[in-house]
Image 1 (cartoon, rainbow, N blue to C red):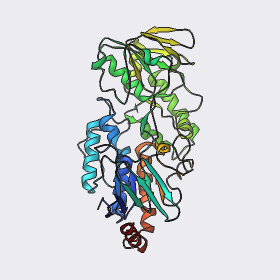
Image 2: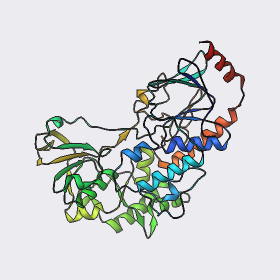
Image 3: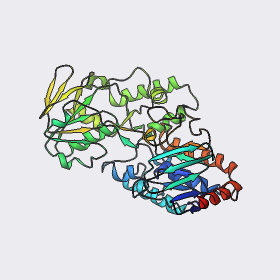
Image 4: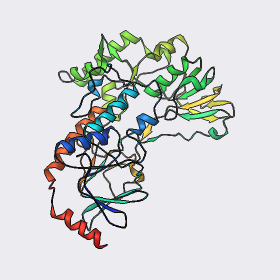
Length: 408
């Protein structure tokens, strides 16, 4: 029931009875499963040749879920009981594959959406890929916040003699043995890549431009995230933030002393307002304290990359062998969704959480909450319920449009 019934004419114009979902990552799979439960078929269009391409193709080998598995489950089907508390990337991918199989979800792979816009005359969404045009009453954007890597424009980087890779292409520190590596970015990816490099005798120099909250992954044997979610139900946000920082300082010490200055806003407040996720420490901080990971605190950033190193705005220079860009990801929605002002220039819904899942004219978004897989699951359930209320399996408008397709 995961796939929608299709009607196709000779001009590669395809009518889709149910919603079109763009993206076969966790967001797309969760929404399709919830629609299936409601008796609504759907069709997923995926530009790559596999499910969850970000997880399968663009993550490093040692990656594990940062949160316990109960906070990362998709709706209607949990993780296997024998999975560890923090599943690794391969276990998470196998879970997604089993999830798709359980709900008979069969995406159309190698379908890169080039353009999607609303036909105001006919009242349908027209979604064009490289070889077909798909038409439906509903369009669900499930490409998410992390569709494309962010590549900063740093002067001179093309002249650098060593390798330059984004974390989306980084697999293991084995490729950087005994090298001096400049890691630009100090989020979860920057921290974990730096830690991984240490295990292969590389010398990571982590560039820290901005303030950052570092929290222990667990407090007193319990997930820090789980503690925060439990406390926020009973106490004001500012008090929960104060508690988290008090315990973090007790467990980790004063991170300011090692070049990791904390923001003025608390970790939960900052996450809610800006979407910036606190770093959950899995061992990198001890390597920073011991000097294995060098922290390069340059508030003005990198001025220029030279043939064999980097110059910084404050006048410092450093010789390096390789550069790793831990600069994150961005939405790609503005490149293909046309004539829609629901998204801002960064490809994020203008309407904040928890109401950013529904636009107008049958347009929906999932996976743009800045609240991880919990936000994805919440969106997917809401979208499926909303579309189910509109769903008529044999509605006259779909049948009439099929006739129109045949005549054109």
